[in-house]
Image (cartoon, rainbow, N blue to C red; front, side, top):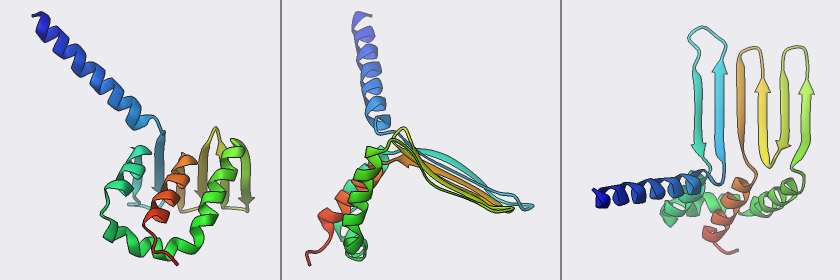
Length: 145
């Protein structure tokens, strides 16, 4: 009985550590609502770690083409991420007209992208660090100039 209790405790501790690691980088949240009849409603949350892990697990040959196209923009992505981390709470864009609203802000180290129109509502937020992770991985596989 004692061995079974120790095994259960070990399994629970392993799950706890794995959960902390997976959700440690934060969560990417995507919410899309179409207001038209029969419109789609998409809501999902994904641990930000899946982006980093996914880019590491993706075979290099599949990333080389994308990385080559992104090569000129990678320094911009890296610098953007670095600067956004300096301003953990900042409003970047807030544009409104009679029926549309676009809002981009950084709050507590997360980038929030919100677009609301008469037909669609799109809300995306993710940790700013995710931009750095993507830029780093693409830079690793980008062909040298």
